Image (cartoon, rainbow, N blue to C red; front, side):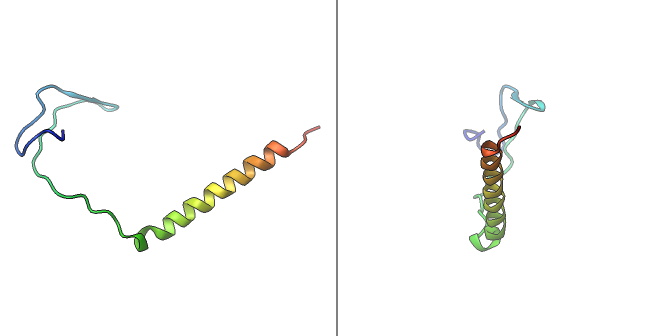
Amino acid sequence: MVALKKGQYTQTPVKSQFGFHVIRLDDEREAQLPKLDEVKPQIAQQLQQQRLANFQQEMRAKAKVE
């Protein structure tokens, strides 16, 4: 798809998890990444969830079940 120019389409179908597709490039634009201030709360929440999951996994590994 990266090699396509505007108005061109793939010559052979492209396989994805949803089936086969013919792709046509209509337009190109630069990807705009979100600003750090916009995603900072989401990142903090993900890090907190990862820490909690790691803590739970460690506690289960250390637990002695009789």
